[in-house]
Image 1 (cartoon, rainbow, N blue to C red):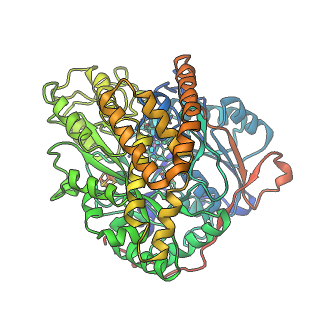
Image 2: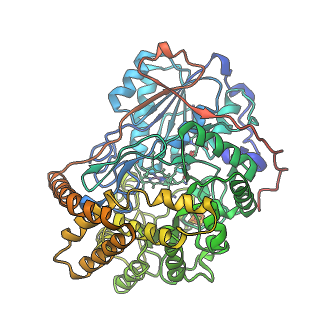
Image 3: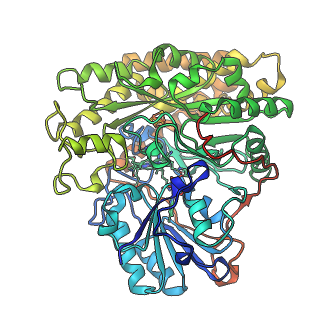
Amino acid sequence: MPPLVQSACESAGPFLTFTPHISMANRISSSRTSVLLTSVFGPYAQDDEYGSRLINPMEFYHNQVTRVQGPFSLRMFHRSWGLMLIQANIAARCTLLDFPTLDRFVEELRRRRYEVVGIGSITTNLLKVKLMCELVREHQPEAVIVVGGHIANIPDLEERIDADWIVRGEGVRWFRQFLGEDPDQPIRHPLIPTRIGTRTMGISAKEKLGGVAATLIPSVGCPVGCNFCATSAMFGGKGKWVDFYRTGDELFDVMCQIEQALSARSFFVMDENFLFQRKRALRLLELIERHDKSWSLYVFSSAGVIQSYTFEQLVGLGISWVWMGVEGKDSRYTKLDRVDTFDLVRQLQSHGIRVLGSTIIGLEEHTPENIDEVIDYAVRHNTDFHQFMLYMPLPGTPLHAEVSARGRMLEETECPPADTHGQFSFNYRHAHIPPGMESELIVRAFQRDFAVNGPSMVRMLRTILAGWKRYKNHPEERIRRRFAFEVRGMATTYSAVVAAVRRYYRKDPALFTEMSRLLTEMYREFGWPSRLCAAIGGPYVLWRIRQEERRLAQGWTYEPPMFYDVNDAVNAEECPGASPCRYVTPQVVCPRREAGAGVV
Ligand code: B12
Ligand code: SF4
């Protein structure tokens, strides 16, 4: 029987419509159900027949931001937040396997009986999902298979994998409805330390309670609706999104609880355009001020939106890191209308706000002749980090529909889904760039940025220092406290780091000068402790950098550990070795928005 494909996005909040073939009879009773949620299996950083790719590891920065920065690349992992959110929000017994190996996945299927197996994936991991569905059928033929996440946007997915349900869009509400639970209950927020296994320059960071940001998921989707954007398309496209916490009051309550549970002082705000919802952000600011919170927020934001706030507001909110699309020279995206991105980046950095700029390689007007100009334009922004991505029509986006209609998509034999990760090849015929050339162009962009601007970690220290200098004497103690928190380690570890990097670049006059300038500034600011640490620690850090270089040359790769979590309904004794799914429950819940009021 073909699977049922449902656009869960449409069933979220104001966009509630059900496809007629889905009736309550298809659903399952929560109290009798055991659910297994799983991400796709690893290892990831290798070329294999399941679609893993060496250049597409399970790493945020290393696969798309600092990929050519060698020993200076920032290495870390992030849990599968969507699956964690679903697990925390269903009452049925639920086990979560995050980053299992294939053997571990099979072992779980053999060990315990599940009525529902939910697999979360993006499009590149199609072959893994196909195999996982086959394995479920083999080991648990009675189980209902549900597939969700971005993979669900592949138009004919139901013909390619053996699943019972393919869910497009928001998964919490879908699962609650499917299990016969109340879909309108408040959203419990899982407790998520944002990063795992952080490492750079051959040194692994200590992940102490309180030192790691907590992930916060206020909403999913983005109403701006850029034509290529998979995230926006996934949750309704232009003008639409799904809120988990609609008001500043709800968000503040959840943040306070997370702060307490994880001793968190900073939040990685996983919301594609957090500041877009102005009313919510400004109410949050009000509460943050009133309750004397000195949090740091790491956010994604489009340039026009961030520019619409004053620096007083941004700094007051604690915005200290922003991921922002620069997209490309003369790009025609409305989010960049009337924004001088050079000036904006400079200004943000001067207030201590680290910028991760994002540039698209392969926009329609890009040619082999003008691409260096495009790359130089990006590099001149001198952002702290720079992501380059190929312009790719991903299933579900308006761009995909348009390029398909023009007959320009490649056959999968020419570009398999596993290679559509945006760092290697186009999945369509570009009007000007000859096939295959894009793989070199994207590496060229990263290399140019690295050669001119140096290691991102050091650029970031430069921005943090600028923020400290500007705000260390701010009249408000709350503001001073945050900048003091952000600058910690600068007089010790980071002085050693900059001294090491300076020495590393001793034969590169431009970067050597830049590192020397930064180190002098640190000495001036932090005095003899900084000098001492640079003198003693610098050689040690340099040795670690060289060691890391050798490890990388020998082909060292990095894989995330596996996580095995159970929710409250599972008898923990049945699952030895499992960790409890931890979450906070909202105490402040504002009335839901009226149907149709999805646009701010
Ligand atoms: C964090 C993240 C990562 C992490 C992944 C960590 C992990 N454990 O998987 C890292 C950095 C490693 C990563 C890597 C990549 N990523 Co990524 N990543 C994201 C990001 C920024 C956030 C995802 C997230 O947590 N969102 C918040 C949660 C709540 O939403 P969600 O995951 O969508 O989950 C909801 C629904 O999708 C659904 N759902 C999810 N799973 C399931 C399962 C079931 C059964 C059901 C019913 C529903 C369901 O319910 C959830 C709650 O509503 C998104 C962008 C975004 N804003 O979503 C890109 C994104 C998912 N990544 C993307 C891509 C392309 C990649 C890379 C290929 C990019 C690259 N070249 O580096 C690699 C692939 C790595 C690999 N080997 O697989 C694309 C996917 C596009 C597509 N069509 O598939 C996105 C959308 C970014 C983009 N706009 O291009 N990524
Ligand atoms: S502004 Fe960013 S998140 Fe929003 S639609 Fe455009 S690319 Fe996507």
